Structure formats: structure tokens, C-alpha cells
Length: 64
View 1 (cartoon, one colour):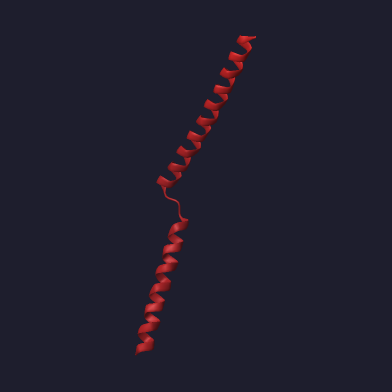
View 2: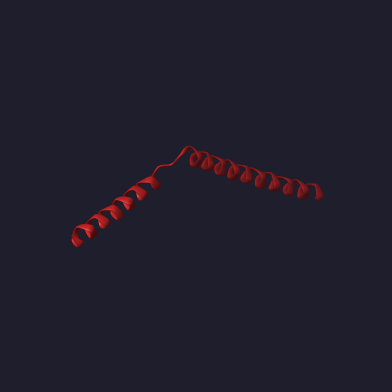
């Protein structure tokens, strides 16, 4: 009887782990939206950096 209970507990734990790990693989709509927001913010940051360098170059050229 003790072995049976131990086997059932082990099976339940393994089932829970398998379900938990497989649930982590799926990406929901909020995760996809978050990734798109991150990409957009990163691209905007790059554009701002380029604009800042252009302004810096224009100031150097104006001083000449």
C-alpha cells in the first residue's frame, strides 16, 4: 500500500512538472505585445541617438 501511494505521489508531481513546463513555452498575446513594444522603444532610442549625433555634427560644422 505504501509503494502505491508513493507511486501515485510521484506520478502527480511529474505530471505537474510536465504541465508547468509546457505552459511556459506558449506565448500569450500580452507577451507578444510586450515584445513589440520593446522593439519599438529600442528602434526609437536608436533613431534619437542618430538624431543627437547629427545635431552634434551640425554644431561642429557651424563652429568652423
